[in-house]
Length: 497
Image (tube, rainbow, N blue to C red; front, side, top):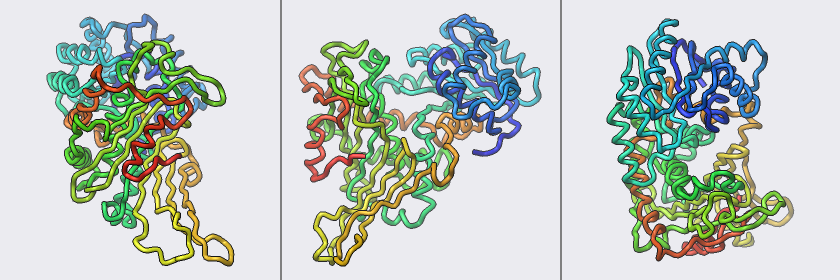
């Protein structure tokens, strides 16, 4: 990360009493501060309905840092300097009076330090409050720059479907310019995801192979070992397609499939990702069963212990048809990728927690080693996003011995082994980018709307009462057995990480 610069700013976190602030935001800000990469001077103002004082808020954030931060407090003095920047303004985000109090607090903070009035507002609230907060920021004048910059960060989900996404974008645009709006997808802040672009566009060895002539298929997997835990009520409204596929996995697909941007700046990168979205073949509502599959976990075992099925989770209807597993087969109809299938899958209560991208190459056109087994696997490049971040390239090699026998060999690269230090958390990079005004790793309005438009036929089909229910799978497995038949239609098989 770049070293800190003298760029004063104030961050206002709506929903400061919630899990996101406690688990991610303040720990990330602390790690940036401890690593001397957070611009100074800065002030962090938490705001929520909870009636607590600034001192109590600081104590709670200290506990949060101890539990969740990548960098632990080295000394009381350093923490005290950071804590001095923490403040708290209680209030209901639907109450206009809160924004009057925030305005007074901001003026007091900015009047006591040199430099412009730079303001960053973070929506760490339920999405149902986004419209209200935006309307109040606009009505109070807080959305307008005051001699510096003013930006907002909006957490996903960005809408519930195409219509609601457009309505949210319209509401945001009523009070702010597009360059003030940062739609955060924390997957794009992960080190391995960013390194995907470096792998492609800074290494001449790979780019000539990155096309339909050499790539047979691409598999993108985001698997979670946990169930819905305490989020059953939310998940009933979302499901795997909305929760993960519409944002994280489609973003990864775009990074794999996009053309080289002119520069690594926000507008060119967003433009190239949007071209991929427009090139994805529209999903035919009459053929959803051929291009999409859904599943739901039942009782099973996780970590050797019995766990309940999804319908037995708190907040879940006993006859729920919500998918906890989703798989898609997409095709990108352009010159580079014509005919190459992109398989996307995500699910909860799967065999292990893993996120990876696997690029499988074509087999050699002619095997000259006649005595070699015909089952030698084709080359495969696997980019591991989490855990054990890194890459692995599988190649064929001669096994030791007098006979000429071939076997697969993995060439591995692990971030922890090569660079030693633990990579920064995704929120660290993304928060710093927002302060610096770099939206490259954020989602743009038109991309969000296109993603919802693409998945609309699947969502509509699955919502119909006449649609088949999700396929059941045992918790702790790799998903429903029908998913194997889903990919086998093309002669393929799911990679087992």
